[in-house]
Amino acid sequence: MKKNIPTIRDVAAAAGVSTATVSKYVNGAQKFSPAVEATIKSVIAQLGYRSNPLAQSMITGRTKTIGLSVLDISNPHFTSIVKGANRVALEHGYTVLLVDTDENPDRERPLLEALSRRVDGMIVFSRMQEQDMDWVVQLDKPTVYFGRLTDLKLPSVSSDDHRGAYMLAQHLVAQGHQRIAYLGFSRSRRDQERLDGVRDCLAANQLALATFDTHSPSALEGERMCSPIMLGASHPDALVCYNDLMALGFMKEAQILGFRVPADISVAGFDNIQFGRYTSPPLTTVDLQSEHMGVAAMEKVLAIIDGKPTKDFTLIEPQLILRASTVARR
Image 1 (spheres, one colour):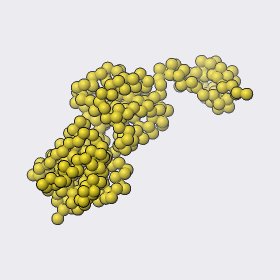
Image 2 (cartoon, helix red, strand yellow):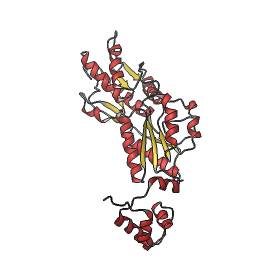
Image 3 (cartoon, rainbow, N blue to C red):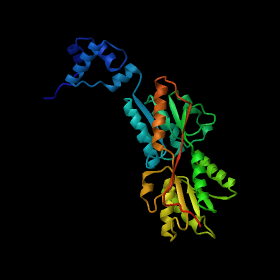
Image 4 (spheres, one colour):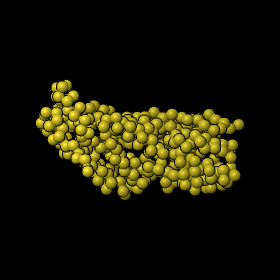
């Protein structure tokens, strides 16, 4: 025989209070005396009562859900961001609704518009140009953006990509590298910050920078670009890649072509994904504190939802992680 699921009326009857009192207690809409709250809590535990999330959202106007859009969930950088954001959400009784735009700007607007109708707030990565994103503000939903913004009025969280790139380039210069190249992904606004950081450092040291561009920030693109970079009349003695995935793909293909890393070319990336420490050689990288970024963004959007003060912009400091894929030149 199927067991009856306890209702709010059962809780009210057993606790000797009205259903309105139970509803307000469950939804946190009103405080009651310690004795009344203790009784309701005890009855809920005894009966195994579970509130209806849909009914709760109708009463409070909240879904207790935060939307998080990422560019490619297969990239471990975004996985770490989701991990940090989710941890904070769970601590505050929220769940995360994840959307993967798959590095496709054309998918972003319809997905985010649909997402905004189902959540209390959003955390957004985007490949769209800032001047094309006014519609995000018009969604009238608490929203935190990942990255630096010039004109768009949205709270944001960003890593200091320029500083991280400058530190990495300075390390390569200090190791004696003279022919340094940058393998970038120009569709990303963060790419320009990283390129500028490397270029500014080299300019300060009277060194030129060779640049190459890719179609996507992937290991496959790192592999594809290895031949044109390494098989020309002369190749760089150090390569900075837009991210770790590209660096790992490049290193694999370079070794297949017969080059030694780092003896023939030093290679470095960004993001400090966990796989980088297990490659041969382990990858030098800039740790942009991906998980911390997720934590900071979730804390910011929850503060906005609760009407608490929060900074408009949070900058996460990078850390240089030195491993064996870069070596000093004689």
